[in-house]
Image 1 (cartoon, rainbow, N blue to C red):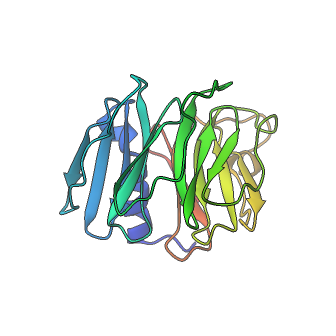
Image 2: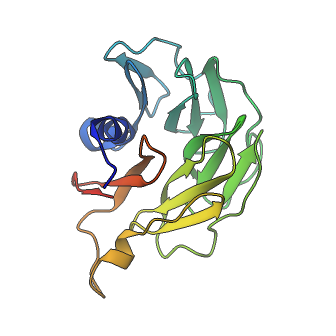
Length: 212
């Protein structure tokens, strides 16, 4: 395995829903991490700089926060796909005013922009290339999306641990493929993170289980 302590810190930041409640999410920087609650309020911990809470809201719950590549800013997205940019994050567009078939559950930075993932597997790209979606492919709802830093591809992660690779993203395996036939996780996957080497990914279940 290429998982190290920094990877586990990234995963911890991504899975703060486990320890901070079902309406929280997190993102990490080199000097700490941020916690996002459903109202859009951001709490900085471990020395992470403060860049402010979500701006004008439609009333939809904030669901995901992701750091910019520099770690000097972050993006926040809500269930309606409205994106709020902070620090050095650049707003590239969002789904304001668009009726969605399913709520947005996650955001990931990709190249010069970002990608949003819907619970139904839909993927929406802004400022980066669209590489495909997992709509109609996943056997369970989507939990997260991970993107290659250069914008060449992304991975869509389902809450049963299923993984769908698009573009230049590399598939390294999935939870269903590793489990005995007919076996399911005790609790769904709630978040995922790329490893620091870029060669793999880690998933976390709602009961604290870690899969890589």
